[in-house]
Image (cartoon, rainbow, N blue to C red):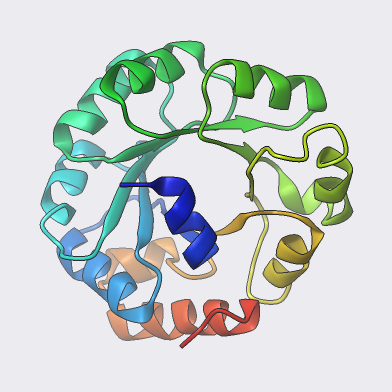
Length: 208
């Protein structure tokens, strides 16, 4: 799986974080059908490795694990079926485990120094967080010294502002609770989740 190629084509990644997800298969299938197949299950969600293992059976799903904090987290996620990893900040042990396992890793960063360190650690792309506090212009600023570093905008993005971050220079953006709200996931409200995903993509200009 070429994560950069998929992010370039899709431009969106969905973050799933909820206190309860009774039907991860149905949730994943809903997002794939809506045109948002790059999905991360945050490890802060209870029993996340089991959810990843169950969701991995969904055809067309590009499945990752987020909020990966340690090499043990990384191994558990990979063993469960995650095909890429994301971290909230610089996590050298996670990067090393991803390199060892030969899977993509998206490391979190905010400052130019952190972006440079993420690149040195072998990041496939750099997740810039919190994007909404930094603004779309910050991505153009980062591309001055880092013209070839793929940047993923994360934090506070929604259907109303996502396109601004793509225009500002982000390779891709993340869709979080605005698409898969915790209560929607807990109650398996797939019709509403699918509607929100399609709305998000349409606002980005990538919907079908």
